[in-house]
Image 1: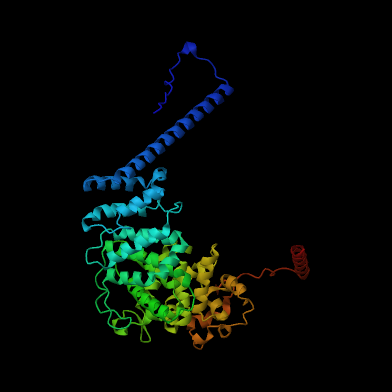
Image 2 (image 1 turned 180 degrees about the vertical axis):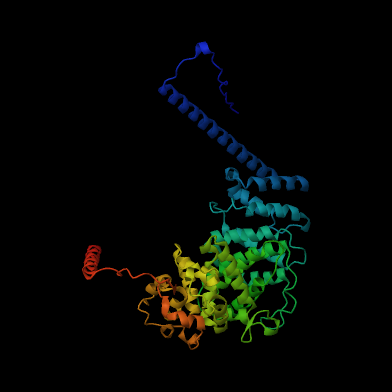
Length: 506
Protein backbone atom coordinates (compact mmCIF):
# COMPACT_ATOMS: atom_id res chain seq x y z
CA UNK A 1 0.00 0.00 0.00
CA UNK A 2 1.29 3.44 -0.85
CA UNK A 3 2.15 5.79 1.96
CA UNK A 4 1.80 9.53 2.07
CA UNK A 5 4.64 11.70 3.33
CA UNK A 6 3.20 14.74 5.01
CA UNK A 7 5.35 17.89 5.21
CA UNK A 8 7.08 18.75 8.42
CA UNK A 9 5.47 21.44 10.56
CA UNK A 10 6.62 24.94 9.68
CA UNK A 11 9.40 26.12 11.97
CA UNK A 12 9.23 29.49 13.68
CA UNK A 13 11.42 32.09 12.06
CA UNK A 14 13.61 34.29 14.21
CA UNK A 15 13.29 38.04 14.12
CA UNK A 16 16.45 38.32 12.05
CA UNK A 17 14.97 36.17 9.26
CA UNK A 18 11.58 37.86 9.27
CA UNK A 19 10.53 39.43 5.98
CA UNK A 20 7.35 40.82 4.48
CA UNK A 21 5.23 38.40 2.43
CA UNK A 22 3.60 39.69 -0.72
CA UNK A 23 -0.09 39.21 -1.46
CA UNK A 24 0.75 36.91 -4.39
CA UNK A 25 2.82 34.64 -2.14
CA UNK A 26 -0.01 34.45 0.40
CA UNK A 27 -2.49 33.44 -2.31
CA UNK A 28 -0.14 30.80 -3.71
CA UNK A 29 0.48 29.37 -0.25
CA UNK A 30 -3.25 29.22 0.51
CA UNK A 31 -3.98 27.49 -2.81
CA UNK A 32 -1.23 24.95 -2.24
CA UNK A 33 -2.56 24.13 1.23
CA UNK A 34 -6.12 23.64 -0.05
CA UNK A 35 -4.95 21.47 -2.95
CA UNK A 36 -2.89 19.34 -0.59
CA UNK A 37 -5.83 18.92 1.83
CA UNK A 38 -8.11 17.97 -1.06
CA UNK A 39 -5.67 15.38 -2.40
CA UNK A 40 -5.18 13.90 1.04
CA UNK A 41 -8.96 13.72 1.61
CA UNK A 42 -9.57 12.06 -1.78
CA UNK A 43 -6.76 9.58 -1.20
CA UNK A 44 -8.03 8.64 2.25
CA UNK A 45 -11.58 8.24 0.94
CA UNK A 46 -10.33 6.04 -1.91
CA UNK A 47 -8.29 3.97 0.52
CA UNK A 48 -11.22 3.48 2.91
CA UNK A 49 -13.59 2.61 0.05
CA UNK A 50 -11.15 0.06 -1.31
CA UNK A 51 -10.68 -1.45 2.13
CA UNK A 52 -14.42 -1.71 2.80
CA UNK A 53 -15.11 -3.33 -0.55
CA UNK A 54 -12.23 -5.78 -0.12
CA UNK A 55 -13.53 -6.69 3.33
CA UNK A 56 -17.08 -7.21 2.05
CA UNK A 57 -15.85 -9.35 -0.85
CA UNK A 58 -13.69 -11.45 1.46
CA UNK A 59 -16.55 -12.01 3.91
CA UNK A 60 -18.93 -13.00 1.11
CA UNK A 61 -16.40 -15.49 -0.19
CA UNK A 62 -15.81 -16.76 3.34
CA UNK A 63 -19.48 -17.40 4.20
CA UNK A 64 -19.90 -19.62 1.14
CA UNK A 65 -17.84 -22.29 2.89
CA UNK A 66 -18.67 -24.60 5.76
CA UNK A 67 -18.28 -22.54 8.93
CA UNK A 68 -19.03 -22.97 12.58
CA UNK A 69 -22.31 -21.26 13.58
CA UNK A 70 -20.54 -18.72 15.80
CA UNK A 71 -18.08 -17.77 13.03
CA UNK A 72 -20.86 -17.54 10.45
CA UNK A 73 -22.92 -15.37 12.79
CA UNK A 74 -19.96 -13.01 13.29
CA UNK A 75 -19.39 -12.75 9.52
CA UNK A 76 -23.04 -12.01 8.85
CA UNK A 77 -23.12 -9.45 11.62
CA UNK A 78 -20.12 -7.70 10.05
CA UNK A 79 -21.79 -7.74 6.63
CA UNK A 80 -24.90 -6.31 8.23
CA UNK A 81 -22.87 -3.34 9.48
CA UNK A 82 -21.02 -2.91 6.18
CA UNK A 83 -24.30 -2.86 4.24
CA UNK A 84 -25.15 0.46 5.89
CA UNK A 85 -22.20 2.15 4.15
CA UNK A 86 -22.76 2.84 0.45
CA UNK A 87 -19.02 2.73 -0.19
CA UNK A 88 -19.01 -0.99 0.67
CA UNK A 89 -22.00 -1.99 -1.44
CA UNK A 90 -20.12 -2.83 -4.64
CA UNK A 91 -19.45 -6.53 -3.91
CA UNK A 92 -22.79 -6.94 -2.10
CA UNK A 93 -25.09 -6.07 -5.01
CA UNK A 94 -23.87 -8.67 -7.47
CA UNK A 95 -26.06 -11.60 -8.47
CA UNK A 96 -23.84 -14.16 -6.78
CA UNK A 97 -23.68 -12.18 -3.54
CA UNK A 98 -27.45 -11.74 -3.34
CA UNK A 99 -28.15 -15.39 -4.05
CA UNK A 100 -25.61 -16.32 -1.39
CA UNK A 101 -27.36 -14.09 1.11
CA UNK A 102 -30.82 -15.36 0.20
CA UNK A 103 -29.62 -18.96 0.41
CA UNK A 104 -28.15 -18.40 3.87
CA UNK A 105 -31.32 -16.58 4.91
CA UNK A 106 -33.45 -19.60 4.10
CA UNK A 107 -35.34 -17.86 1.33
CA UNK A 108 -34.74 -20.14 -1.62
CA UNK A 109 -34.11 -23.37 0.34
CA UNK A 110 -35.71 -24.73 3.51
CA UNK A 111 -33.26 -24.61 6.39
CA UNK A 112 -33.24 -26.40 9.77
CA UNK A 113 -34.93 -24.57 12.60
CA UNK A 114 -31.69 -24.25 14.60
CA UNK A 115 -30.29 -21.75 12.07
CA UNK A 116 -32.67 -18.94 13.05
CA UNK A 117 -29.91 -16.57 14.26
CA UNK A 118 -28.07 -16.92 10.98
CA UNK A 119 -31.29 -16.27 9.04
CA UNK A 120 -32.09 -13.16 11.01
CA UNK A 121 -28.68 -11.54 10.41
CA UNK A 122 -28.85 -12.53 6.76
CA UNK A 123 -32.34 -11.16 6.22
CA UNK A 124 -31.27 -7.93 7.90
CA UNK A 125 -28.40 -7.59 5.41
CA UNK A 126 -30.87 -7.89 2.53
CA UNK A 127 -33.38 -5.51 4.10
CA UNK A 128 -30.89 -2.71 4.76
CA UNK A 129 -32.12 0.48 3.02
CA UNK A 130 -28.75 0.93 1.29
CA UNK A 131 -29.17 -2.47 -0.34
CA UNK A 132 -32.37 -1.56 -2.14
CA UNK A 133 -31.86 -3.88 -5.10
CA UNK A 134 -32.72 -1.07 -7.51
CA UNK A 135 -29.42 -1.42 -9.37
CA UNK A 136 -29.23 -5.20 -9.35
CA UNK A 137 -29.77 -7.31 -12.46
CA UNK A 138 -30.75 -10.37 -10.43
CA UNK A 139 -33.92 -12.26 -11.33
CA UNK A 140 -36.39 -10.46 -9.07
CA UNK A 141 -39.22 -12.82 -9.85
CA UNK A 142 -37.24 -15.79 -8.59
CA UNK A 143 -36.15 -13.93 -5.48
CA UNK A 144 -39.70 -12.79 -4.73
CA UNK A 145 -41.07 -16.28 -5.25
CA UNK A 146 -38.57 -17.81 -2.85
CA UNK A 147 -39.14 -15.08 -0.28
CA UNK A 148 -42.92 -15.41 -0.59
CA UNK A 149 -42.84 -19.19 -0.08
CA UNK A 150 -40.53 -18.79 2.92
CA UNK A 151 -42.83 -16.19 4.46
CA UNK A 152 -45.94 -18.30 3.94
CA UNK A 153 -44.33 -21.27 5.66
CA UNK A 154 -43.25 -19.05 8.54
CA UNK A 155 -46.74 -17.55 8.85
CA UNK A 156 -48.47 -20.89 9.22
CA UNK A 157 -45.85 -22.71 11.27
CA UNK A 158 -46.37 -23.18 14.99
CA UNK A 159 -42.79 -22.16 15.78
CA UNK A 160 -42.17 -18.55 16.87
CA UNK A 161 -41.73 -16.40 13.74
CA UNK A 162 -38.15 -15.35 14.50
CA UNK A 163 -36.57 -13.37 11.69
CA UNK A 164 -39.88 -12.73 9.91
CA UNK A 165 -39.55 -8.97 10.40
CA UNK A 166 -36.57 -8.63 8.06
CA UNK A 167 -38.17 -10.88 5.47
CA UNK A 168 -41.32 -8.78 5.63
CA UNK A 169 -39.26 -5.63 5.19
CA UNK A 170 -37.47 -7.16 2.21
CA UNK A 171 -40.85 -8.04 0.71
CA UNK A 172 -41.95 -4.43 1.16
CA UNK A 173 -38.78 -3.13 -0.53
CA UNK A 174 -39.23 -5.47 -3.49
CA UNK A 175 -42.85 -4.45 -4.04
CA UNK A 176 -42.03 -0.77 -3.55
CA UNK A 177 -39.25 -0.74 -6.15
CA UNK A 178 -40.61 -3.11 -8.78
CA UNK A 179 -44.17 -2.56 -10.08
CA UNK A 180 -44.13 -5.88 -11.92
CA UNK A 181 -43.56 -7.67 -8.61
CA UNK A 182 -46.68 -6.05 -7.16
CA UNK A 183 -48.68 -7.54 -10.01
CA UNK A 184 -47.03 -10.92 -9.45
CA UNK A 185 -47.91 -10.83 -5.76
CA UNK A 186 -51.46 -9.75 -6.54
CA UNK A 187 -51.90 -12.71 -8.89
CA UNK A 188 -50.74 -15.00 -6.09
CA UNK A 189 -53.53 -13.68 -3.81
CA UNK A 190 -51.10 -11.56 -1.86
CA UNK A 191 -53.73 -9.32 -0.24
CA UNK A 192 -55.69 -12.32 1.05
CA UNK A 193 -52.63 -14.10 2.46
CA UNK A 194 -51.21 -10.95 4.06
CA UNK A 195 -54.62 -10.17 5.58
CA UNK A 196 -54.65 -13.64 7.11
CA UNK A 197 -51.12 -13.01 8.36
CA UNK A 198 -52.37 -9.82 10.04
CA UNK A 199 -55.11 -11.76 11.79
CA UNK A 200 -52.60 -14.33 12.98
CA UNK A 201 -50.16 -11.69 14.26
CA UNK A 202 -52.93 -9.90 16.15
CA UNK A 203 -54.65 -13.13 17.27
CA UNK A 204 -58.05 -11.94 16.03
CA UNK A 205 -61.19 -14.00 16.54
CA UNK A 206 -64.47 -13.22 14.81
CA UNK A 207 -67.98 -13.79 16.09
CA UNK A 208 -69.78 -13.51 12.77
CA UNK A 209 -69.38 -11.35 9.74
CA UNK A 210 -66.99 -8.53 10.61
CA UNK A 211 -67.45 -8.46 14.39
CA UNK A 212 -64.58 -9.26 16.72
CA UNK A 213 -64.96 -11.24 19.92
CA UNK A 214 -65.42 -8.82 22.82
CA UNK A 215 -62.21 -8.18 24.71
CA UNK A 216 -59.82 -8.86 21.85
CA UNK A 217 -58.79 -5.19 21.79
CA UNK A 218 -57.93 -4.94 25.47
CA UNK A 219 -54.25 -5.94 25.60
CA UNK A 220 -51.62 -3.73 23.92
CA UNK A 221 -49.51 -5.59 21.39
CA UNK A 222 -45.77 -5.95 21.89
CA UNK A 223 -43.22 -3.99 19.89
CA UNK A 224 -42.14 -7.09 17.95
CA UNK A 225 -45.70 -7.81 16.84
CA UNK A 226 -46.41 -4.19 15.96
CA UNK A 227 -43.27 -4.03 13.80
CA UNK A 228 -44.35 -7.14 11.87
CA UNK A 229 -47.86 -5.71 11.45
CA UNK A 230 -46.48 -2.40 10.14
CA UNK A 231 -44.37 -4.15 7.49
CA UNK A 232 -47.36 -6.24 6.40
CA UNK A 233 -49.53 -3.12 6.12
CA UNK A 234 -46.91 -1.35 4.00
CA UNK A 235 -46.76 -4.30 1.61
CA UNK A 236 -50.56 -4.53 1.38
CA UNK A 237 -50.67 -0.86 0.42
CA UNK A 238 -48.13 -1.43 -2.36
CA UNK A 239 -50.37 -4.13 -3.81
CA UNK A 240 -53.81 -2.62 -3.19
CA UNK A 241 -53.32 1.10 -3.90
CA UNK A 242 -53.85 0.57 -7.64
CA UNK A 243 -57.49 -0.39 -6.97
CA UNK A 244 -58.42 3.08 -5.72
CA UNK A 245 -61.94 3.98 -6.82
CA UNK A 246 -62.21 0.88 -8.99
CA UNK A 247 -65.41 -1.12 -8.88
CA UNK A 248 -64.51 -4.51 -7.33
CA UNK A 249 -66.20 -7.77 -8.22
CA UNK A 250 -68.06 -9.77 -5.58
CA UNK A 251 -65.02 -11.75 -4.41
CA UNK A 252 -62.78 -8.68 -4.22
CA UNK A 253 -65.46 -6.70 -2.37
CA UNK A 254 -65.73 -9.43 0.27
CA UNK A 255 -61.94 -9.47 0.66
CA UNK A 256 -61.67 -5.67 0.97
CA UNK A 257 -64.53 -5.49 3.45
CA UNK A 258 -62.81 -8.09 5.60
CA UNK A 259 -59.52 -6.19 5.28
CA UNK A 260 -61.33 -2.98 6.31
CA UNK A 261 -62.59 -4.77 9.43
CA UNK A 262 -59.02 -5.77 10.33
CA UNK A 263 -57.85 -2.20 9.71
CA UNK A 264 -60.65 -0.89 11.92
CA UNK A 265 -59.18 -3.02 14.69
CA UNK A 266 -55.69 -1.64 13.94
CA UNK A 267 -56.97 1.93 14.30
CA UNK A 268 -58.22 1.21 17.81
CA UNK A 269 -55.28 -0.97 18.83
CA UNK A 270 -52.88 0.28 21.52
CA UNK A 271 -49.21 -0.64 21.09
CA UNK A 272 -46.22 -0.73 23.39
CA UNK A 273 -43.80 2.10 22.70
CA UNK A 274 -44.32 4.73 20.01
CA UNK A 275 -45.69 2.44 17.29
CA UNK A 276 -49.38 3.28 17.80
CA UNK A 277 -49.46 6.33 15.53
CA UNK A 278 -47.33 4.66 12.86
CA UNK A 279 -49.66 1.66 12.88
CA UNK A 280 -52.65 3.98 12.53
CA UNK A 281 -50.94 5.89 9.72
CA UNK A 282 -50.38 2.79 7.58
CA UNK A 283 -53.94 1.63 8.29
CA UNK A 284 -55.25 4.99 7.09
CA UNK A 285 -53.14 4.75 3.92
CA UNK A 286 -54.75 1.42 3.00
CA UNK A 287 -58.27 2.54 3.91
CA UNK A 288 -57.90 5.61 1.70
CA UNK A 289 -57.03 3.30 -1.21
CA UNK A 290 -59.93 0.86 -0.77
CA UNK A 291 -63.16 1.16 -2.81
CA UNK A 292 -65.69 3.46 -1.16
CA UNK A 293 -68.32 0.73 -1.07
CA UNK A 294 -66.20 -1.19 1.45
CA UNK A 295 -65.89 1.59 4.03
CA UNK A 296 -69.27 0.95 5.67
CA UNK A 297 -67.53 -1.81 7.65
CA UNK A 298 -65.90 0.91 9.77
CA UNK A 299 -69.32 1.66 11.28
CA UNK A 300 -70.64 -1.92 11.39
CA UNK A 301 -69.90 -2.50 15.07
CA UNK A 302 -72.50 -3.05 17.83
CA UNK A 303 -73.27 0.26 19.47
CA UNK A 304 -73.29 -1.39 22.91
CA UNK A 305 -69.47 -1.55 22.76
CA UNK A 306 -69.11 2.09 21.66
CA UNK A 307 -67.38 4.84 23.61
CA UNK A 308 -68.56 7.36 21.01
CA UNK A 309 -71.86 7.09 19.19
CA UNK A 310 -74.22 9.13 17.02
CA UNK A 311 -77.86 8.27 16.35
CA UNK A 312 -77.34 4.66 17.32
CA UNK A 313 -74.16 4.16 15.25
CA UNK A 314 -70.75 3.25 16.69
CA UNK A 315 -68.38 6.16 16.08
CA UNK A 316 -65.25 4.82 17.81
CA UNK A 317 -63.39 4.34 14.52
CA UNK A 318 -64.39 7.77 13.20
CA UNK A 319 -63.34 9.35 16.49
CA UNK A 320 -59.97 7.59 16.28
CA UNK A 321 -59.50 9.01 12.78
CA UNK A 322 -60.43 12.47 14.06
CA UNK A 323 -57.86 12.28 16.86
CA UNK A 324 -55.26 10.99 14.41
CA UNK A 325 -55.92 13.95 12.09
CA UNK A 326 -55.70 16.34 15.04
CA UNK A 327 -52.27 14.99 16.03
CA UNK A 328 -50.98 15.31 12.49
CA UNK A 329 -52.31 18.87 12.29
CA UNK A 330 -50.60 19.83 15.54
CA UNK A 331 -47.31 18.34 14.38
CA UNK A 332 -47.39 20.18 11.06
CA UNK A 333 -44.61 18.09 9.46
CA UNK A 334 -44.69 16.50 5.99
CA UNK A 335 -48.33 17.43 5.58
CA UNK A 336 -48.66 16.06 2.06
CA UNK A 337 -47.38 12.65 3.10
CA UNK A 338 -48.76 12.46 6.62
CA UNK A 339 -52.04 14.41 6.52
CA UNK A 340 -53.62 14.18 3.07
CA UNK A 341 -54.50 10.43 3.33
CA UNK A 342 -56.62 10.91 6.46
CA UNK A 343 -58.21 14.08 5.04
CA UNK A 344 -59.13 12.20 1.87
CA UNK A 345 -60.47 9.23 3.84
CA UNK A 346 -62.66 11.41 6.06
CA UNK A 347 -63.93 13.38 3.06
CA UNK A 348 -65.02 10.29 1.14
CA UNK A 349 -66.53 8.73 4.27
CA UNK A 350 -68.55 11.89 4.91
CA UNK A 351 -69.85 11.83 1.36
CA UNK A 352 -71.27 8.33 1.56
CA UNK A 353 -72.16 8.05 5.27
CA UNK A 354 -74.49 10.62 6.78
CA UNK A 355 -73.69 9.58 10.37
CA UNK A 356 -69.97 10.13 9.81
CA UNK A 357 -70.57 13.56 8.32
CA UNK A 358 -72.91 14.68 11.09
CA UNK A 359 -70.56 13.44 13.81
CA UNK A 360 -67.52 15.15 12.30
CA UNK A 361 -69.47 18.34 11.70
CA UNK A 362 -70.28 18.51 15.41
CA UNK A 363 -66.56 18.20 16.21
CA UNK A 364 -65.06 20.34 13.44
CA UNK A 365 -67.82 22.84 12.57
CA UNK A 366 -69.91 23.41 15.69
CA UNK A 367 -72.47 26.26 15.58
CA UNK A 368 -70.71 29.62 15.38
CA UNK A 369 -70.69 31.79 18.48
CA UNK A 370 -67.52 33.90 18.45
CA UNK A 371 -67.59 35.86 15.19
CA UNK A 372 -65.02 38.44 16.29
CA UNK A 373 -62.10 36.17 15.31
CA UNK A 374 -61.12 35.43 11.73
CA UNK A 375 -61.64 31.75 10.84
CA UNK A 376 -57.93 31.13 10.11
CA UNK A 377 -56.93 32.66 13.45
CA UNK A 378 -59.09 30.28 15.47
CA UNK A 379 -57.22 27.63 17.48
CA UNK A 380 -59.89 24.97 16.96
CA UNK A 381 -59.89 22.18 14.37
CA UNK A 382 -61.86 24.45 12.07
CA UNK A 383 -59.17 27.14 12.31
CA UNK A 384 -56.38 24.66 11.60
CA UNK A 385 -58.13 23.34 8.51
CA UNK A 386 -59.01 26.84 7.27
CA UNK A 387 -55.33 27.82 7.56
CA UNK A 388 -54.45 24.89 5.32
CA UNK A 389 -56.83 26.22 2.64
CA UNK A 390 -54.14 28.77 1.72
CA UNK A 391 -51.22 26.33 2.01
CA UNK A 392 -48.50 26.48 -0.65
CA UNK A 393 -48.93 22.78 -1.44
CA UNK A 394 -51.98 22.46 -3.68
CA UNK A 395 -52.70 18.87 -2.61
CA UNK A 396 -52.82 19.85 1.07
CA UNK A 397 -54.88 22.95 0.27
CA UNK A 398 -57.40 21.06 -1.85
CA UNK A 399 -57.83 18.20 0.65
CA UNK A 400 -58.47 20.56 3.57
CA UNK A 401 -60.93 22.68 1.57
CA UNK A 402 -62.72 19.60 0.22
CA UNK A 403 -63.30 18.19 3.71
CA UNK A 404 -64.79 21.44 4.98
CA UNK A 405 -66.90 21.79 1.83
CA UNK A 406 -68.36 18.31 2.27
CA UNK A 407 -69.03 18.96 5.97
CA UNK A 408 -71.04 21.97 4.76
CA UNK A 409 -73.03 19.62 2.46
CA UNK A 410 -71.31 21.31 -0.50
CA UNK A 411 -73.43 24.39 0.19
CA UNK A 412 -71.63 27.57 -0.90
CA UNK A 413 -73.37 29.90 1.58
CA UNK A 414 -72.61 27.66 4.53
CA UNK A 415 -69.03 27.11 3.33
CA UNK A 416 -68.40 30.87 3.14
CA UNK A 417 -70.03 31.30 6.54
CA UNK A 418 -67.52 28.98 8.23
CA UNK A 419 -64.37 29.84 6.27
CA UNK A 420 -64.75 33.37 4.94
CA UNK A 421 -65.01 34.23 1.26
CA UNK A 422 -61.30 35.00 1.00
CA UNK A 423 -60.28 31.53 2.15
CA UNK A 424 -63.03 29.79 0.18
CA UNK A 425 -62.29 31.56 -3.12
CA UNK A 426 -59.75 28.96 -4.29
CA UNK A 427 -62.11 25.99 -4.13
CA UNK A 428 -65.09 27.99 -5.38
CA UNK A 429 -63.11 29.25 -8.37
CA UNK A 430 -61.92 25.74 -9.21
CA UNK A 431 -65.53 24.51 -9.19
CA UNK A 432 -67.01 27.52 -10.93
CA UNK A 433 -69.01 28.53 -7.85
CA UNK A 434 -67.74 32.06 -7.26
CA UNK A 435 -71.17 33.50 -8.04
CA UNK A 436 -72.61 31.41 -5.19
CA UNK A 437 -75.62 30.30 -7.24
CA UNK A 438 -74.95 26.58 -7.13
CA UNK A 439 -75.42 24.72 -3.89
CA UNK A 440 -75.50 21.15 -2.65
CA UNK A 441 -78.43 20.26 -4.89
CA UNK A 442 -76.17 20.34 -7.94
CA UNK A 443 -73.68 17.80 -6.58
CA UNK A 444 -73.61 14.16 -7.66
CA UNK A 445 -73.71 13.31 -3.95
CA UNK A 446 -76.78 15.48 -3.27
CA UNK A 447 -78.88 12.43 -2.48
CA UNK A 448 -76.59 11.63 0.46
CA UNK A 449 -77.21 15.01 2.11
CA UNK A 450 -80.24 15.60 4.28
CA UNK A 451 -82.30 18.78 4.04
CA UNK A 452 -80.74 21.95 5.42
CA UNK A 453 -81.18 22.62 9.11
CA UNK A 454 -80.93 25.94 10.93
CA UNK A 455 -77.97 25.63 13.28
CA UNK A 456 -77.33 29.34 13.80
CA UNK A 457 -76.84 30.42 17.40
CA UNK A 458 -78.42 33.51 18.89
CA UNK A 459 -75.01 35.22 18.98
CA UNK A 460 -74.52 34.58 15.26
CA UNK A 461 -77.98 35.86 14.32
CA UNK A 462 -77.38 39.12 16.19
CA UNK A 463 -74.01 39.73 14.50
CA UNK A 464 -74.84 38.31 11.06
CA UNK A 465 -75.55 41.67 9.42
CA UNK A 466 -72.20 43.05 10.64
CA UNK A 467 -70.02 40.15 9.44
CA UNK A 468 -67.56 40.88 6.66
CA UNK A 469 -68.10 37.98 4.26
CA UNK A 470 -64.56 38.22 2.90
CA UNK A 471 -62.81 37.90 6.26
CA UNK A 472 -65.56 35.91 7.99
CA UNK A 473 -65.72 38.07 11.11
CA UNK A 474 -67.21 41.27 12.51
CA UNK A 475 -64.77 44.04 11.66
CA UNK A 476 -64.16 47.02 13.91
CA UNK A 477 -65.95 50.16 12.77
CA UNK A 478 -63.69 52.32 10.62
CA UNK A 479 -63.93 56.14 10.43
CA UNK A 480 -65.50 57.62 7.30
CA UNK A 481 -62.58 58.58 5.00
CA UNK A 482 -64.73 61.32 3.40
CA UNK A 483 -65.60 62.97 6.68
CA UNK A 484 -64.50 66.62 6.79
CA UNK A 485 -63.89 66.92 3.04
CA UNK A 486 -65.58 69.55 0.91
CA UNK A 487 -67.46 68.64 -2.27
CA UNK A 488 -64.56 69.85 -4.40
CA UNK A 489 -62.09 67.69 -2.43
CA UNK A 490 -64.38 64.68 -2.78
CA UNK A 491 -64.54 65.19 -6.55
CA UNK A 492 -60.76 65.51 -6.68
CA UNK A 493 -60.31 62.22 -4.76
CA UNK A 494 -62.80 60.50 -7.05
CA UNK A 495 -60.94 61.75 -10.12
CA UNK A 496 -57.63 60.53 -8.68
CA UNK A 497 -59.16 57.11 -8.01
CA UNK A 498 -60.44 56.87 -11.58
CA UNK A 499 -56.99 57.70 -12.91
CA UNK A 500 -55.38 54.98 -10.81
CA UNK A 501 -57.96 52.43 -11.97
CA UNK A 502 -57.28 53.36 -15.59
CA UNK A 503 -53.55 52.89 -15.06
CA UNK A 504 -54.14 49.43 -13.60
CA UNK A 505 -56.34 48.39 -16.52
CA UNK A 506 -53.73 49.26 -19.18
